[in-house]
Image: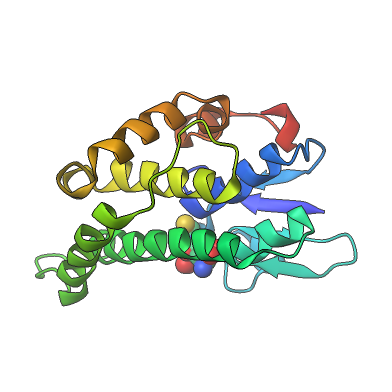
Length: 198
Ligand SMILES: N[C@@H](CCC(=O)N[C@@H](CS)C(=O)NCC(=O)O)C(=O)O
């Protein structure tokens, strides 16, 4: 089994954090840059997207929620699915905004979906569930990782729209080893080839 990830991918960070939390220390991982279409990634996922999990029988699991689900090997409860799917939807909205800004044609106006996405985040952030930054419940941990990503990529939106209790919980979470080990800067320089070596 091997997990393909990139240091800067918030989706990868979620899968890595779940593997760490589940104690899957022997899980091999490979850092790749999906935007460069590396052949080793294309061989596993022709879409050249990460995260992707290659199983020992050669089958491939793509997509953050499916990978986390496979790793934990348990059927999700409705409450769990509600928390994790909404956290991922928040991340998808942020990713849409970030991608449209990053790959905008030179000297062009922002795509109209940027303003729509920012407005959506501004509506959604004040309504995220209250959570405890030291909680080990996976929907809470996943939400904290998504909020950390919004704070990193769109601090303007995060600072203006997130509640004070959300910001306090995110700060508590950011100081935990799970957050520290999966920080983009830490991953970019790690020589670790398995999750447990992080
Ligand atoms: N829906 C996917 C999204 C994954 C995704 O967007 N990955 C990005 C990196 S953060 C990627 O591989 N981008 C390269 C591309 O889309 O060509 C998931 O849930 O994992």
